[in-house]
Length: 332
Image (cartoon, rainbow, N blue to C red; front, side, top):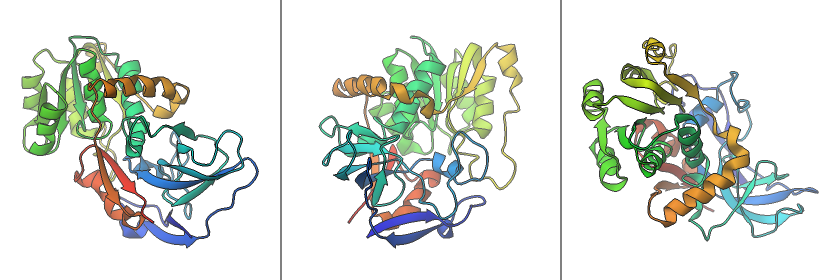
């Protein structure tokens, strides 16, 4: 049987356990031009919260009674597809389930000899590619510039900061709690860290960014975005990747009140979506894989086990009880 997590209702605010239901259905059969994937690891990402809303976005919403959308890695068990063979390891948006039959659209082969499978959901997957393309193509950091990253201990932010260091920048990260801030500085090599739970963020940004901010990579939105806007440099760049502080709001989203700083400083603020760069995923993976081998880029996955524990694991995205990339191992 195939254990699946399906969307039962559209949540208002923070999803609760009744947002999804667990079903056991027959393992799907494979038609002509299709293959069957046994899912081994599932990616949990803040974007999943937005995918549940019935609203216009960069990707259609998950429909009620459909399998919850999620990235996953697994192994091909059966194939009637000329491009995929039994035994291949693959990545795709297979959803929160144990097995998925697919025609191959949007699926990519991966090589577990390069890195453990969970890494292909993090550094060498969607979060890593988001960091790579978002920072390099839109933040355009130059050596000697100051880069500020919010959500810096998360799957995207931690990679953004490390790539900025590779490019010769001064990097300051914002994260929640002393453990995460220590991790940023001592393990990832950030030049400084701000604990938004225990510090005055505005004062800390001024102190740690004395030459103001050239690039701000935003994963949280809200008040911290306004603080960054106030400190943006002339011709600075703000990359809008996410707004996790706003995703579970039951009231109107809090937008930037300090946006005229963009005008005064001739700065730019731009939203990014990783799917715009699908054709260049291979290039990003090759370069980041090289950085990993050279010891310049560290990857951290926070792995929990059991598809039946999906809801409890999902909550960690918003409680802060995780470090690095959140992954769910699909047990038998």
